[in-house]
Length: 92
Image (cartoon, rainbow, N blue to C red):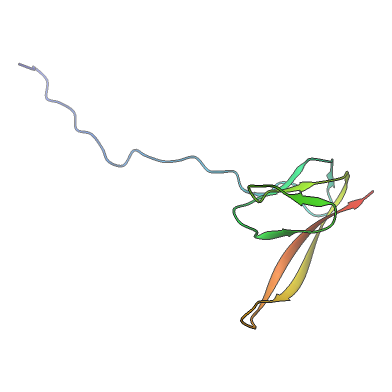
């Protein structure tokens, strides 16, 4: 026979770490070729000039230069307008 009562277990002890998403190199900062500029789920930011879209939708610099964020109003297929952010790298 046990001489100590068993301790209860809790259902609230689970938590997953954050995924570290977001902008890594901001507007007017320098980026080297291959640097990750934005980590994202889906295309919240769109790729522009001198950047590539990774298979996990990350935006990477294709060349070394200055990062430029540009806002563009686009029209969706149902007629609504949306402001979309486009990420570019300008050669320095």
